[in-house]
Length: 377
Image (cartoon, rainbow, N blue to C red):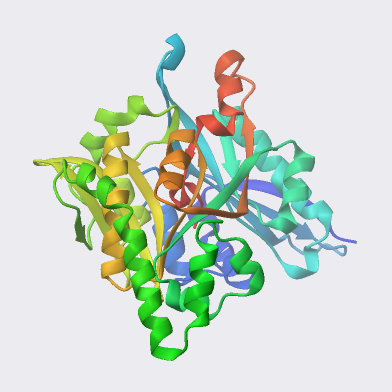
């Protein structure tokens, strides 16, 4: 029977083993070589540690790496509301948990995740991760707590394409006011149905016209393929409007979201000053907002205009995943984004050094502002 040992290593010392474990066990979009360089050489906050679990078989065979786990680094801004002191906490983003198939019993993963947690909460202020369903039990057993789950918020823009493939159960999930109109659209044949659907879509956009006029108090929304200039200044200017939020910067966003096919950046400004941005990935005819940030007024102005812009670009829907502050969920609801099933759970560990009211705030999902930006890649 194999015995296991967990080692904390400098990434460059075991680069080849890490890349091989990733290739065998993780669905990575780029090559393992590129991913390693991106994560351990190019990141604004370069992780200096990676964990490997090795198996030493009976008979004196050498240790062989059979699993790995990484800890990325993020800074979390803690607002100074209710008389508290504003500060920056260093967080570990738990990532790239990979164990070879023949060693995927509970014991190796449990030992690896436990060792990572012990180190992270001794060296950092907190650690958080997005384990898949298979790993959530392991995270709970070693002491992580479930913070919550990110829900997907969806605004349907083109009802013709949506209704043509909608089931009876899908129609039941539409708002009560929309169901009779949807049934009318479905009852029309061929071209008449398409024309009716278009009229329905335009009627829904017309309902947003007042919000669009308010949004136009800012400069018109712009789209581009690069991170909009001014993110550093924007974060420092509006961070006090947030309770708990990961620090954004020009460099971090350029690293986190390099140029890619179908990727767009939206921005609104007041004169030359950036007020809000959104990062959008277009996949097929759907627009996915991976990150949205700015002043509260700027975010409202951006999203109000972005709904129209996505429709103009031919998108059938626009969506984002979010967990956190109520003002954002209320804004999405006001723009008629429908809340769908929560599909990504977040687990959290807090260092024993963090105590009192701050510890309570970190454990409260409504204090956070979490988007896909906060997840590992």
